[in-house]
Image (cartoon, rainbow, N blue to C red; front, side, top):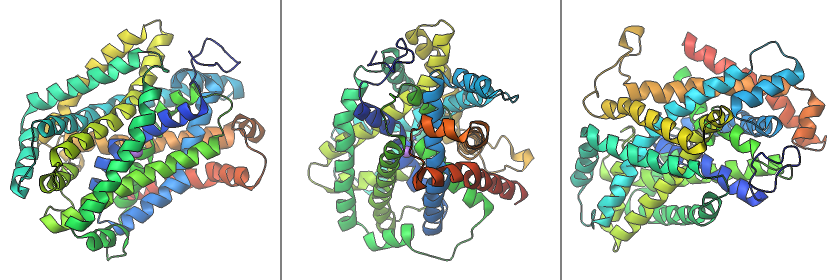
Length: 459
Ligand code: PFF
Ligand code: NA
């Protein structure tokens, strides 16, 4: 256990402010940046989507991120328990723990596809270790992706390995290994991504990539696009499932929340945009479809490794770091359920093992969607034709569970808790920054989220 907070010295806490920032940034930066952002931006036509995504981050997701951290630090327990305490504190009649429980379901659903995608990164790491990619053609790269996605046993095996690793780390107490590893791996990932942007820019069509991501082009701003942009903003910060609340519960009183939030969001945006700028130049030079979907990163970046001297080493390093980025996120997804099970008397090890096994079982729905179930659309009868199990799980979590929880947090923090309690819990001086954030949490975020939901349902 760390230094403790003075309120409850048996409760674990991060060993320093910087350890908190690194571990929480590790939760934010993950597959959502390198895999998710480019593919969702690609499917939604680029520029306009990116703009709305950045607006949703600034106006809704980042303020909600700060609120979730704060709720965790106030409640000092697993999400359902923490929210139950706060409900009791304000004497609300609504059932706050329900939001925590919904989040726990969300963590399991996110992990169920996260494990499959992380598994693909691990599989490519092995491919690189075997000297793969050197001199590969576009067709070779496409065949590798197709190959991986055609084999359910292979995807299941990798998911199990990934979840086993996640469970192992979560079994230990929070200060071991993780804090240390994060300090080295995070800067390395940023560095290698920057190198790839430069190389990809030379090799591919950088101008077209910049225009696609940031330029204005004729496009249809459908309600669905707005919802996807907001969903991606929530997903990339990991707001709304209680992972951040759990980390907030381990956060010392000395962490300056607005500053920490700023740096974590800035880092997250930086990694997502760098991934986009590494991937899209190759999209436009190789003939891969920008709307190719979840395979996009795996169809493009190996083209770099095929072309450069020492490509196998760079490829290995890249997929290793991507796997690491995924692990630092997956442990934050497994932590809330394990914390809840600990409250029920389970050991961390038992909780982590049982939950990881459950995730691997559910992950079969995602591997099935990539393989034999490519054209199986379970909710077609409800008007959701064209959506596989994977699509339904990913969009259901990102676009509904996360923003709905975000709405609940905003109402709790903006309306149920007193302004003064909130100000002291952050803590922030009663200046313009606090006033702006409190207005956003009270009005802007709830109105935006509600409007986008109403739009999506009506549209
Ligand atoms: N923020 C992570 C990513 O961008 O990959 C995903 C994530 C982590 C979602 C933690 C939810 C969470 F609690
Ligand atoms: Na992210």
